[in-house]
Length: 365
Image (cartoon, rainbow, N blue to C red; front, side):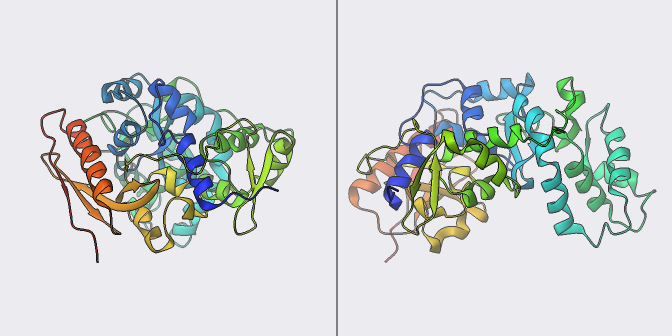
């Protein structure tokens, strides 16, 4: 098999993620292509799409949220993702077992005396008609399970039951509590039931969709992105539609035959990524885009700057949308200029055009 080095994988990932060149596609199509954006920080997907789409208008994404075409819901890795309504309905049941397992991985002792099916049933009834915060739901359920912290009960309901966080949560420039409502109530129909004939069409779709946005990638990368352990059969079912490579570690990488794999020498522009971006978190081996020494940055929710396609700095923003960049390695004068230009554009986006201030700190010695 052809061996793809780290730089070749980097350029392929950037191309799939619309980070090598901003794409001229509708917002809804971009969210679908990316398989959603991690979104526990409500405003972060806006920066993620600004860095990926030409002429991105945040009002368009807000309109899709308000219009129920995209939703905020717990899905991959038991994290809040912004996904299309169709993907939420189609994918949720396939994630149920993983969501329950990860919930128990955190709260097994707390929930030892709780019938999780009963908890889901009672919690679902509370969220069927009126949006409520999960702490509110937990406090109502505490009468049934007085020995369990209401916070744990509420969080458990938010994992076990298909719910969405309704607007104004997630709207551009808006703040508000995470009020939840059943997916069925918000979207007008329940999530698709699990397939009962032993096949895994949703899993097969997840494999192909993941590779379209993240490939070439190993099965371990697919698992890291989705949180799902039971996808080997789905991979096997679509393998004859894929091509194979190897990385420098000798791992087998799978990919779609016609997906872009640019020349490794293709220039990569400076890009600012939001917290918890799946361009980084969507892999088990993240070295195609971030050094092992910096791996913890993405897990901690640091926003990062890509220079020549790799994480080279972190960035923060102040209340007046001024952007401050802190390099993690030495940046050349030309790179510093490029970072400043992109940072000013980002500051203008975040402030609605009112401010364009950016500060690039000195490189570490």
